[in-house]
Structure formats: structure tokens, C-alpha cells
Length: 552
Image 1 (tube, rainbow, N blue to C red):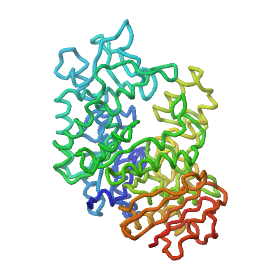
Image 2: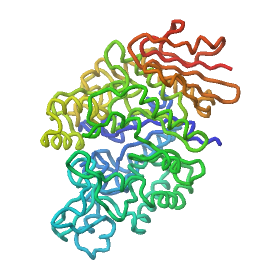
Image 3: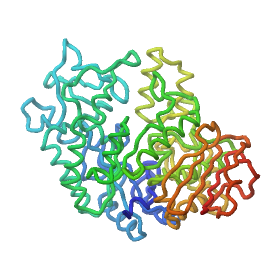
Image 4: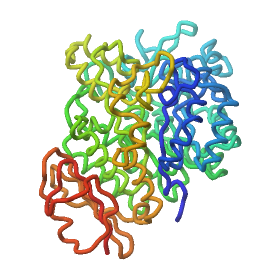
């Protein structure tokens, strides 16, 4: 069945770092509006906006204090309405970030909830008595420390799976669900085109709240009891029934630590829940006892096995979302490619080819289409991310990792790598702001910026533009069946897409060496759809070479 969101390419805008129109050093809505023509030129169909709601910004907007107001730093509701209208004028849809596992502790509901045990809003959040003078259980927060915060006013603890300024909502309470659905309806009536749902698979908790397994010697792991919880499918079916099914919108759920069988229900063709999910398996490879903090490269074979599993098991049953980058992940060319001057461009193109030719809806994170790299800042003071700063102190102070090792891990995997300001041109602060940027600009903006790349037909930007255009032209890219090839290769990621009597062969060299590959030699006739090299060597893929061949 044809559905517009299957044929679309989504572009994620992290508003704080995209474009600053008023010189305060913080990106804003008018900055986005000013660059809509750039996105139209790139060819994307949908903008996913990271949160723009009113927020104290403990977690860069993912702590919402008012769902129906715009963060003052980003502008006004009039600015939003203008941006939405201008995007629609250009045929670009707008996807809002829905954050309803938790709110800010400054949200009116929580302000009321903490006042007294019999407050009408008390049950909007998850409150528990302590046990033996300690927390209700041993759960640790995703951002370090305990997942429980003691509140003197009522001598009880509230749950926060993230920052202590992000109390978890109690989805067991029907009133909470109705409030959320009313708010979602309000935005849909405004004319938005869908929702990306933050950690949506965490809204149903195991109501026995048992202790979690202790992995790093500090806190118990809460995730088995909050991810893919007992009523999660019930809640999402209800949300679909009450809101989503009434509008022509798209939905993608961020599903932390989800299991594939749950993901197939969330994104099932007939499940009546969501259109697709973000899973984390491929970006969680290489995790250790200290979680994601590592500076080691992921072996290609592991990456292939993970991505291939999601491709094959979803075939004909559910729809994939395809991504390398987002606001929580480091830059893909630094992580899975090679960001050295010699190989940055060619490896960025290879990675784009590998992803965009798979089955599913591709996502491009701002700057990915330029081949932007990790920031590699040497000082902790240059980072702003709460997760990074908390992890640095917790892990080094507990002797789990040295300060030097932790800085290397942050350079490799820290979230601020994605959040450095968009690199527009060679002027001061990369053209992002006339003021002082909220986060330091990556100094390589003189070499990597949108203005230069738009002028250069061989740039990463023009390569992304071509990939996006191919998706509109060839149905096999959207609907072709996926079949993996060369599964045992440690250097080459290869697969075919098949639709009727058409076949599309894709092969990508993930190394800086020439590697033997005879796949193309067996095809006597075919049309090359795209490649990052002008000439090829028979039986060989050159460093970071990618080729896509259509044949019958």
C-alpha cells in the first residue's frame, strides 16, 4: 500500500543549533524559516523538529513545562505558525517531537503534584514511599545517579528515569492519558504532519517496581521494568484510536532497548499503533560495563548482522526507520566512516549510500548532508550535555574509568558532537550566529560548510541530493525486498533489493583499503544509479567505495 511517509526522506532539525536569526547565540524558529529553501533544494520531504516547547532546558528542551507554548529563546507561536505555513508552501511537512514519558518539574501539573498527597494532580506522577530510609528501589537514572528523588514536602520519592528535573508521568492514570491526547489533538488541529515520540516505549512501567540487576556496581538497571512495559501496546492502540487515526499524519516512536518482537507490533502494518520506530541496536554496539562510553570502533560484521536482522524480520510485516545520526548520536562519518581529510568526503558518501538504499524511511540529521564531523573538544568545559557531564563525574569519581580515557570516550560518542552549530559558511561562527554560540562551533567549518558544498557538484551535499532524488524515481528503493550478500565479509557491506523482475545491487567498502569484490562482474548489463567514484576497478572496491547497480 502506498503511504507518503514510506516514500519520504526526513530531515531532523535541532533548533538550538540550526540557525540563529536574532544574534543571541541560540538557534530559533525564524532561523529555520530562513533556511527552508536550502532544505527544499536538498529535496527532503519532512522536517522533524526537536522540542520547541516552553522548557527550563535542563535537558535541552526534552523537559517540557508547557506543551502549548513555544520556548522563549526559540520565538513565539506566531513564528511557529509562519514557519509551518512557509514549509507547507514548499511542500515540506513538519513532524513535532512528542515528549510524554516525563515533563519538567516546572510543569504546572508537577508543581501541583508535589504540594500534598491529596492534591488532584498527585497521581499524575509516580510517587513512592522510601524503604528502610532509602529509595523505593535501586533503579538508576539514564543520566546517572538514582532514578528516585526525595521530596521533603510530603516525605516521599518521585520517579525520574532521566534528570531529576524530568519526573515521569503516571500513564496508569486515565486523566494523564486524556491530557496527552487533548494536547496532541490541539497540535494536529494546528496542521502539523505527525509526531516523533521520545522514549515512547517507556510509558508503561512494571507496577511491582522490583529492584533491577546491578551491572556497574552503582545502581540497578531499571530498563527491564520500564521498556516495552506490560500495558505499552494497550496505550499506543488507545492513542491511535483517540488521536492518530483521525489525521493524515506520520508517527515514529523512539523505542529504547526495544526487542524486535515489540518493535514489530509498534510498527506493524496492521497493528493500529505507530508507523515506524527508532531502535537502538546498531548504535548500541560496543557498549561495555560503563554503558555507551567507549572509543573503540564497532566491527562491520556486527553492524551488518544487526541491521540485516531488522531488514529481514520486518519484511512484509512492519516498516523500518533508517538512521545513522541524530541529536543523541555522534557524527556518522567519525563513528562508522573516516573523517580524515583524505577520506571524509568519500566515506560520508559511502555511508549515505549504504543507508538510503535499504528498505525503510531514511532520516538525515542536520549537517550530515555536509559530512560534518565530531567536535573532538579537549576540555570538559566545552561540553554542555547533561548526560556527558554527569557520566564524566560519576564514572571518574567512582574509579571506573580514568579522566583521560573518559575524555577520549566523550570525543568519540558524546551527544554534543551532533549538537555543534550548523556550518553554513566561512564567516564568523560558521554563519550560525552573529553573537556568542551556546555551544562552540566545530573549528573545521572553514573546510566544511553549506555555502561551499552547494557550489561544488562533487560535494557530500550534492551526493545526498542525488540519493534523495533517486528515491522519488525508482520504486525498487522504496518497496524492493532486501536480501543480504557477503555476510562473512569484514570489509564490505553488500545487499540486493528485489522488486518483480528488477534487481538493485548495493556494495559498500567500509575500509581505507582496496578490497576484492566480484559482485558487479557477474552482471553483464545494468544501469549505475549512483557511485562515489567516477571510475571503477574490475573485481575491486576502492577505499570507501560505494556502487549501486540496477539490472534485470
